[in-house]
Image 1: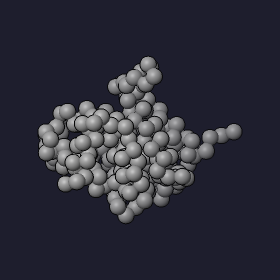
Image 2: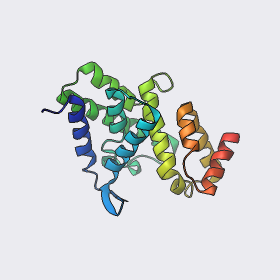
Image 3: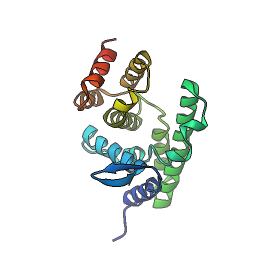
Image 4: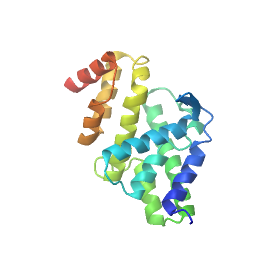
Length: 195
């Protein structure tokens, strides 16, 4: 039986994720970092939404697509450099995901809608874009926040947590507060939310 367009597109996305030369250890096995990240994004989506539609599932899965190819270090230090890098990454990931969707049999309207979600257009207004942002924030808080918090000065970190929190939905807030965190990380989150 032939694969559905959704299964074809997900398989194509995961094949590109699997090309990531960076590895993380999962249950004692090295796994391509981006493939692991995409899996965490999809796992959070399943907790955020009972029945996410195909567009949202594809946008969440494609959000970090081939991010290793354009490292953050290729852009200037600071907020402007970071935002430019993130915008360019979203543009590239959106275009590639849309192309893979068209190749799998999706129409232009579906492909462009997913690209917009990946580019984070309509954040706070579009439910699909909000789902992508919620999953990205939850993956960050779950997997990267502890190490990240050791590299950034305290006041800057508090602002980052506050900005991250503002972008999240109430359901994502609820899930984030249930994450296991070190006492230090939880204290930072509580301080940020009290501010």
